[in-house]
Picture (cartoon, rainbow, N blue to C red):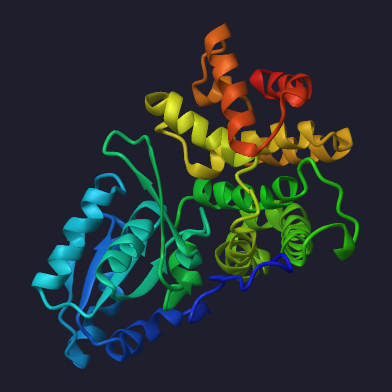
Length: 360
């Protein structure tokens, strides 16, 4: 916050964050505490996965949920429909189960309806469960901006045993979505101590460094060995909470940097081609571009690329479905420059970084 501003507003963290083996047992008590009449929004696989474990506890507590299995896009239209369903059914809270699409939809519906919210993430693919913004899409899958929540998520229940059942692909995607925080925070700036920037920026930087160090140090071990790695619960804490804390502090700091800028571009301009790829898979390719633009030492860039290859992730634009003609290259350049605050003078360096990720 600048000295001439009266105040700043942050939405960081969640009301309660349960994590570890068996913490799904807390869901019934938290549901009852928040009124006991949930509208559940979840995916076709994740909803029965969780409901099978809690239905007896719900029954004993007199909780009768209204369940909506969602298979469409995370759109404002669907969020409004579920808000209306919650109102008509007399629901006191929204309970989101699943990955990014269902959790963002649950968050948006709760925001539209002014309802309390519990998120039960079933993977670590993004930090969506504990962030205070809802990323929205049109019905065709193209981006539709975001909806800011009025308050933080009330409760997150991240059960290790549930999350361990998710495909390894979601684990890899989440690792790289979190890794992206560091190169994005420091892109186009030099930060060596708190005097080089605002305190909010410095908080983002030191926390992003901790996330980056942990994930590049332990990511391969967790990916290969899962719960047997001894660091799986730590990775849940890192991806689902620590990363969202960085996102919370970065609000208003022009943090749509290159890695996530590439993600947004692919969803907008190559909607069909990019549809099969997870958020973190596209961002990961953007991380390589970001690091090249930041002119990091090649050792660090190669370390990240080798980790991507070990996790069998796409590591070039071509593998993401990008068509490298003159029009698409110019569109990508223009979008990244306009959305990240870069200048035309940065064009040669950005072009070089894009060429690095174009193809092997």
